[in-house]
Length: 151
Image (cartoon, rainbow, N blue to C red; front, side):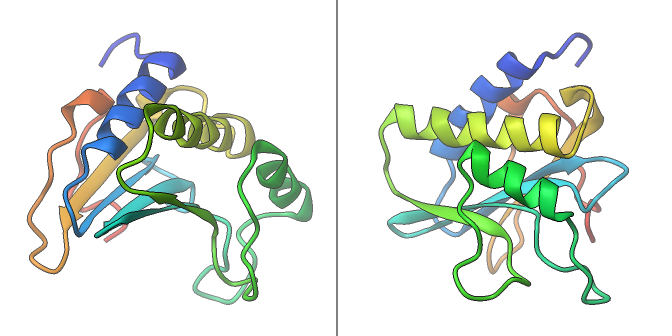
């Protein structure tokens, strides 16, 4: 994992999202600040991509107004009707490779620029198929798998 840069991580994230099996969830975020993450869920013919921005368990906003505006400038649409939800978008599946790269770029910008994560080496991931909970390896990410992350 030594020397992993944001561009290499972005490329691995694009490939990983494109390779999700049906029913799979992929969450990528800071190993310590678990409220800082992006997530992807493949549901038959669409991928829901989200960046953490909703409310915490005490009904407080996770982001400041400035951070929320920064996500929107990056390209993350705000929650449609419910401010307790995350910023997110839906991609048709399968999508063109340019779409996977675009959402990976947006994810890196959120993690690096909004959440101020200094390096992909601070990240980990959790991935599984629902409802079985079986792990889905994502070696192209170049970051550690942690089944207990955000447990």
